[in-house]
Image: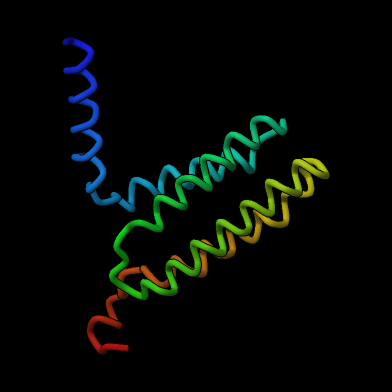
Length: 129
């Protein structure tokens, strides 16, 4: 009976948490940390753990609601995932140094797509676009 109660509780809790929206700010901070760990990795195993976590977190970010330019935001996240997978493949086939170019591309994509979500500046608010 006790195991049935635990099973029922776990099953119910998974339904409750399944509909929770993604806190994009927290998820992106964790994504940035995973990216940093991948860039700073000195061993392949360490790199693989970090890049896998990074890819997972970016995929979670895709489930968030984007209010400004949602199509472009999702395209950007797809490009980031592709670069991360390219970095992982390169590192596993040719060593960690070969992952540097795709990792740099991820940083460039981050800068480009974060511009979509920056709050408007003072003059933009005052005079419009």
